Length: 522
Image (cartoon, rainbow, N blue to C red; front, side, top):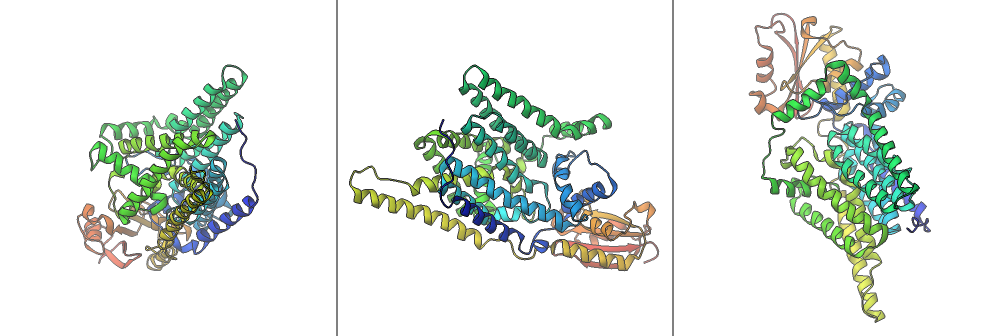
């Protein structure tokens, strides 16, 4: 097995330039660009309780389906940034942005290790400039860590396979477990990595080397066990409540699906392949189809024409992406539909590094293409055409993403708007303990709850408060059965209830309406 390619002239400069570009594109306007909603408020409340009160979470954020949760290690990984930043959201967003920058570097390394300097440069450049990857780095959300963790898993696997040093499988295991902890659908990455480890053990032949790989696999199981220790403690102390919630979800049939099995697989596959390159599939369907077809063509081409480690991993990436499309289409039926305003392409962002690496391998192969003719002129013509195609393709993708970069301020105003809303609420309620009510009832009001708590206000049950804040999301007015900004809030509070005195009503954003009630007569 040949060793990994040595550092070529300019590789270090290319890496530093890519990291600098990624940082510039992610850290500019960072306090205002990221969205702020219930998920972000909830996560900051948990992190605040962890670092200030020592309340260790045993579960991660709630999933958008069922009543079960993601992994608690998501909070543990962000806790140092929250502690250093005094539980300020800006510090946590900064850590997530740094993870996005690091993912560019790791993905660069993977593509370079498989296909050389050009492959690494293209993969890193596309990820650095990707509108989707930039968006994933701008706000607090558990799926936004999985591009880094999965790229680490991929890097560990490439290193283990290429150097025949089994200990690198432990790095791959850490990457997989963090991916699974950050989002439950990250478990889809486990079988491809496990299969590759077993293939590595098989190719070593009987003896010490195979035993080393198998021992590394057992070490990976140990990493998995450590990752799920918080969940185990929770289950043992709660009567297996989380397990019961998962079983209830499965008994109820899971998520509703909008397409048949084959159409669902095709649609999910397009979402997986197009998301990192062209963004949300419904925003640019023709571009998404072209990008997806190009990725499939590159995989088919390099799986046949490449040699050595590149061929092995191209085939593995093709199988991993195919498996993921089938698995996600069946276990996450919601991916078969697109609801404007509710992101879920981030759920499969653990596959983004594979897509970027694939495009990098294709561009590098075009760059070094040679004609089959012995005539030097014909050979030079083929090389010129191939390089022109590579430059045009990569340049077109970059330009496509540049015009779709996130704006300087999030449509909902981000954290600054939520903080300003809390200040306004405090002016209306004074030092009264505040009760919160989210509409619809399945959406908590944590987007406003965290800035209120951060300002020192007590958030208590309605029975213990003389002030009620109703947070209404217009995206779900059909589910509420009444429009926000009056009817929905009055329907939830009711003039006959204790909170009858409306003292303020305002819009935090085009989506979110806030009504403030005090106990007493209207």
